[in-house]
Image 1 (cartoon, rainbow over the protein chains, first blue to last red):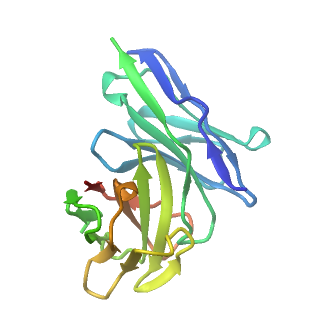
Image 2 (image 1 turned 180 degrees about the vertical axis):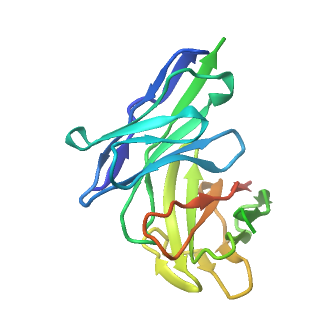
Amino acid sequence: AQSVTQPDIHITVSEGASLELRCNYSYGATPYLFWYVQSPGQGLQLLLKYFSGDTLVQGIKGFEAEFKRSQSSFNLRKPSVHWSDAAEYFCAVGASQAGTALIFGKGTTLSVSS
Amino acid sequence: GEEVAQTPKHLVRGEGQKAKLYCAPIKGHSYVFWYQQVLKNEFKFLISFQNENVFDETGMPKERFSAKCLPNSPCSLEIQATKLEDSAVYFCASSPQVGANQPQHFGDGTRLSIL
C-alpha cells in the first residue's frame, strides 16, 4: 500500500541548531515528493519538491531535502533553525499523473527553544 | 486570483444540519482537490475535479458528502445531516493542467465545528 511515514511526532531544536526531519515513503511508481509547512491556523505552504534529477533539492526559507531511493527516504534539513520555523511539517508523495491526490504523512511538530 | 480562496474560515453547525464550504481555485488551474484534516494531523483525500468534471472520488464518503465545480462559480463541498465526526478542517487545493510535476497550492482551510 502507498504510504508516507514521519517517524517523529514532535521535535524540539534550539535556535541556531541544525534540523533534520525524517520522511519514509512506500510507493509503487516513481514518486513525486513534497514537503509542506503549516503554521497555526494557516494552510499548507510548499517548501520544496522533488520530481527527478539532482537528489538534493533546495527550497524556500533555507530548507533542503535529499531523496534517497535505496532508503525510500526524503529527509528535510536546515543548517540553522530560527524561532519562526516552529510549525507543523508534512511530507507528501504523489504520482506523475496530473490531478493525482497527495498522500500525506501524519506530520512532525517542530518546537524551537531559545 | 493568485491564491486559493476558501470561505468561510470557520463554520459552526448543529448536529444534523447542512454545511456548505466554498473554494475558488487559482485562476487558470484546472484541477481542484478537497482534503479533510482531522485532529491537526492526518490529511484525508476526499475528491478531485478536472474543471467541472469529477476526476477522482475514491476518498469521498458514500453518504452525506457531495461536491461540485461549476463553470464561473466557486467549487463547493456540501455535507448533509452533519455528524460530530465531521468536525475537521477542510482544505482545498488547486494545480495547473499542463505539467504533471506541478505542485498543489492550498487554501487556508475552513474549520467546520459540529456541536
